[in-house]
Image (tube, rainbow, N blue to C red; front, side, top):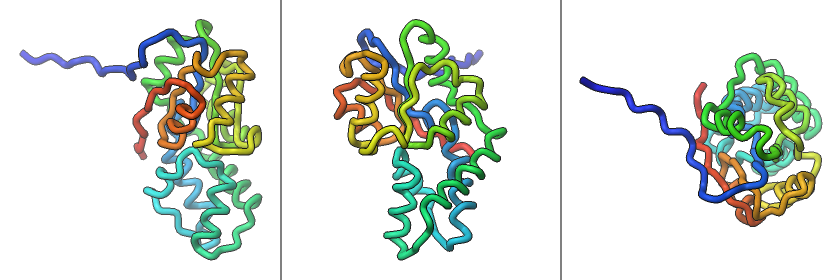
Length: 203
């Protein structure tokens, strides 16, 4: 007779935390495959290549920074604002396919109203709010810190420190949920404990 073991949820580090800070894409929402589709469609008219491995390696970087880097890398002159806008529009069209990351969603449900939440993202505010709203989660978060709110992107700790300041919680009392190396590095630099969320690469 065989039995099926329950799926182990995402374990948290020991200790009491006064706030949870979440990356959005790939952490709360299983959006990275949809973002990659949006990137491919937005870049194709410019003949720009963006390999999937590079896309995931650059997870956490602001959209505009990625376009600047691709221009430099491939000798292109893509207009940054135009590509950002097109990529954003295409992503919003894909939102009906969006799903939450189950283990992270479980922690959101479990800790909601017990500790304050913030989102700390390299995506635009429009993208973050659209993703969270599509899943009915937007009202769970007390603070949103998005790409336009800070000047130094992850792995710099600025965005996480800004979120902690807005919540009125000391950095050392915050727990960060992140799916990228850059995000984990930023959390560590901010003096915060972190949980590594396995990257979702479902299509």
